Image (cartoon, rainbow, N blue to C red; front, side):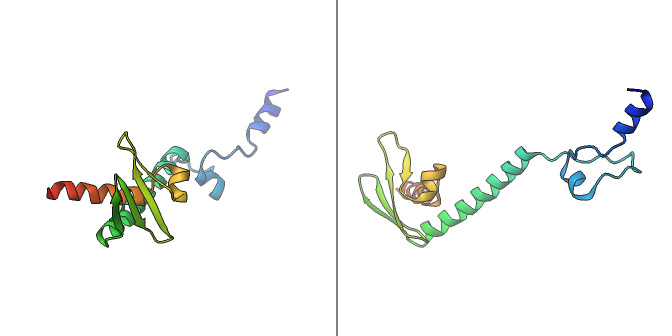
Length: 125
């Protein structure tokens, strides 16, 4: 392959390396601005933070509205938006819930609400 053939191949459209490239195309006239690489890890972390904020807000509402009921021996009923769930404290002081969210993610607003209620109860005593 000659140098001129190699040069022509390199002038073809490159594979996009960022969201900016894939959405807007490359700006060949601008040598000063480089596309910002799309970082999936940063995006996932941002989504997690937003999800955690939403979960905490839901838990606060559950706790403040009296929808967390202590039953017995570390077992609570939590009246959620989509049903009533059982939150239990095991022998290692770990909370679990029978809601679909906890089953899938290992955390939920119901367990967080129980943590908030028990934290406030311990502060009063």
